[in-house]
Length: 280
Image 1 (cartoon, rainbow, N blue to C red):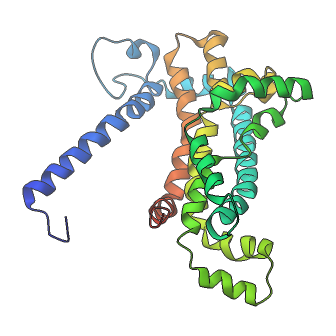
Image 2 (spheres, rainbow, N blue to C red):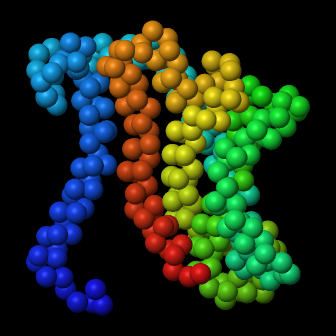
Image 3 (cartoon, one colour):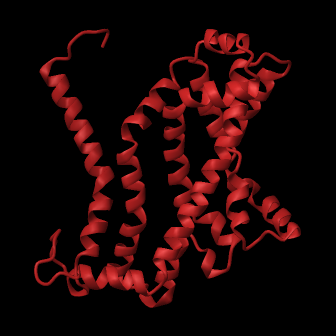
């Protein structure tokens, strides 16, 4: 507040609001993990208790989740698909963002406006044309069908462009004077400086495509290509629809890589988000 120190009531109110928001956001996940630890008879108990009161059902629930369906294989599919998507997005986003941020050419403003416009278009709106195109190309029910539609991310281009706007032009001019090509500037100068922004975007990309249920549901039908969300749905349809313990165990397993990835990259994630808003 303009450099003034907040009063104690204001600080207290801020912490109460933040704590309340944290409770609201974390409560479903806490309940998910708690349910995965309980035996079936306690899950449907009329009495509220967070942890099991008698025997623990964690072993049975997690074993069922891992053996009823090939959940580990689905997790591997998710890792392969999300990693491939992120790699392709970086290969496209970094040069595109550099061009929009640092190169001067006719129509640059119009192109950037188009990027902003595409941000408000949900990918479900173009899913049918992509589905028909992939059907004609014979790419349905392949890993390519899960990866290629997301190889270009307009949000990634926007995020990287905002970060590149904070890089001094003198750094780029010095590289040009040294005889470095534009391609070399992109990957040897700009990309290393954009590691925080890449990590921030990587978290967004990883979470979005790891949790994506809509596109894999219509793009693949082979069980060996199922991603984690389809794996959880398959567990429910495979005789475990009312067994909430195994379902919550599977959901816990699926969400754990996301939590670990964010905790591992938390500092860089915050840096990337902060720096991308410094300059328009």
